[in-house]
Image (cartoon, rainbow over the protein chains, first blue to last red):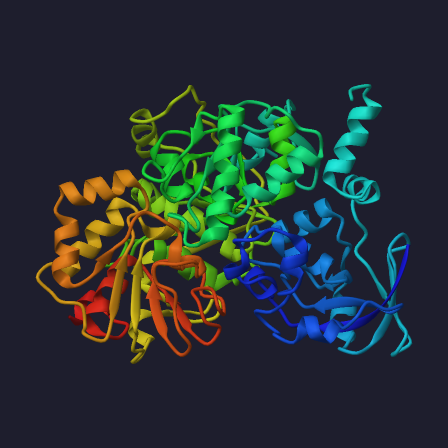
Length: 172
Length: 419
């Protein structure tokens, strides 16, 4: 699967309060959450995404993206806001799980995280694990997912994976 | 090579003799926890996946604690989802307002989480229970839904970093200071994906309250969990409250550690974390003049009776500075009652503090002390991220309860020695 996207760049240690401030945690409807995506660090972010178009959107960040709380509201807000993938040097572990579990593509790429700038256009090949920076004419390697994680991603999330597993075991 | 305690607990729960760091496992869990923020999503996912009955109504724990007593209609509706689900499923561990408290103070106190357990919670501070010699970690709502359905969870077996605390604790230095110092040393991603095992002679002398505080903040260094091997102190604490049998598990001889870090505690002063990261620590002697508008003593990190005792010791016979609001939040009903019995609440009220019902409240900017633009707070909580306690232009400084209480009196961040 290929994603063509415009980049929105963030720094290190973007925490879950940046992604979806706690004051919105009295709701869990992804559509409502998406209206406040990244509000803690950039109040204009959702406006910048604009209307959905052919060109998708991608968040590129530094180290430890998604640190802080366990709120799944964070990757849900990002996914629902129309961001098709997140690239970072590293991810906080609960955010990493949550993104995999809900089917938000995330990619670890140290060089990508450092070289890609806001406004760059990139092409992400999820199956090959390759990022091409169309603006800078560069390619970046992606840390491949372990096979177990890949299975969850391919199934479209943890619960879909669980259903397939149950089916294959003859339980339904 | 032997297994460290975290690896050994994980091996036991997936029916293997041995596990190695990096291996993916699906393990049986002892307790699955959710709260009023994360459980509504999990319950929805549970139903969407066709769930009708949880795997074990005695092992699924729901604690409405974040925005409770409900701060607004939407929060009330989220609590209603938990309440209805708990009734429908016949959950034995649903804690209504009046019985509830902050989940990570409540569950150890009630003997619900025990040594040797594998615990997951849809709350990042679930790592607190490592202090009991359990393997406990925060997960998301979908993980919780999966656990409620199957009684299982997937893990990548983490590497363990061993932290050895030697020397003698200085006056007013607590478990909170040791963990802030450690996070200051290794950074907010210094233990990413790893387990922080706390050990050494100083840890052996720490109270359970201090140990719970240390493990609680392991996640602030990016860790999967914090853990402390059980000893006599643990067993004494557990024996008084365990609601089911448990097994004490120790690490093996020659256990593998990815790193071993030693600290000489004799050199550690009380610590203050400057905004916006818990790793921005400074010793109290180098804080300078930081005036505060509010002081908060409470949270899953420092809302236990020991924390209130030390606060009362400092506040006794003193008055909160006229420019400061001091908010004290006992973490559970038991803590509240004990504080009442010991006369601590009277000391707080005489000093001019307000005492709240148990809740996470201001720690996540929910209610009971949200900050306005430009305001500054000292708090015994765990995160000082931008906007965490209210306005994005408010500042949060983290400390232990003694420093927070002294600061409330002084009107600026201060050691009790300065009063």
